[in-house]
Length: 510
Image (tube, rainbow, N blue to C red):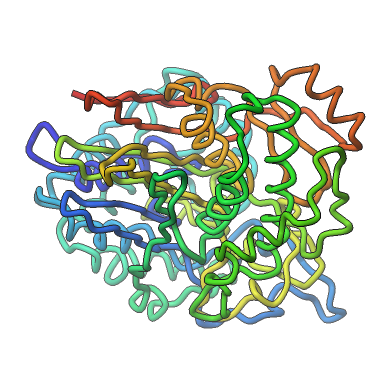
């Protein structure tokens, strides 16, 4: 941005850099979603979620007896969908200002010359070493004879050459030519099914962003195949007519209300949501005021509503995702969430190309009633079909104030906890009047219909926990819920920012 670029330039450059320095989730072998608003006031929704290869089939992970072979959908060559990230970057580029060669060069330099890894990265690389060796067919930069430690330099020469082909040949430098051939060659070594035609035919899609009013503010989110935009819409609207601010932040009354709303939205997610190009998602109904209020008609403020009384399916998915929130001086706003699915994706490194492929095929419903690696049980809406995009929880979000001016950019990694983390962060700001840091870093809680329990972080009120137990709720304490990144515009026009303390997150500005 100092060189004259805008938020969209920054979005492209940052994603490419993360593909080098955040190997377990930043990627060019995966996909994601972008929600943006340019200085002209146009809402932008770019879907670059991975797709099922043309040779994919509904029962491709079932053996002859019909038993699900979930290891095939979770690790190795057969787990990968067609990557969407590079197509997404070039779809974003139409809103940028600087030459693409300028935007990609920092990533090339970091890959070629190396960078010092953090303690968390060293631990992650050591923990996945065996899996990376097992699921790759050639040595890679991510594996060495001795253990990684903080401060070690990770050099990725093959990835640098891949990035140079993108620099020189654009989108075709990834989806056609040498890189595409290397991907297909790697797939053939492990019975993967991605073909040259699959790569050549991949396209990022411009979707119509979801937008709704909440207490005079406008919330803009991602439509299907992301479930996050609809879930946040439902959750916020379930709150709008209730005096949350008078209940108090994380009082038993506000937490219980928000939990019951989350329970109902996640039941809807499992039953109704999938790729809209393959499944008729009833967006208009799911987001209508009548429907949303009806969903809360059996809400009882004095006790838990058992999830067995609310219909739909179980969902949980990878939390190894990354998020970027960006705003520039002209008011361009960009919120991006991307992922490989599992940490380090399928653990398959493309030989000669230096990047890790996703394992997003496991986000489909492999077989009705059979859980994926994160506990997701799905049905027809999310069944495997060639060319179809698997359902996601990613929830990039932006908010305009009551005068239609830029107000909030938000988003987070965290699998199925993503929508509830974004929801709670927005409520913290809009209803409880918090600054960005408190809105992000105060303890979070999560309910996703099944398992029928409230998950809480350390630091969540013991008094409120005790009260919830007497109301019939089951509680469990877990590790960090999300890593939310927020930009908030103050009344005087200054920016207030927060990078989540739960991770190796950071803030930059000028």
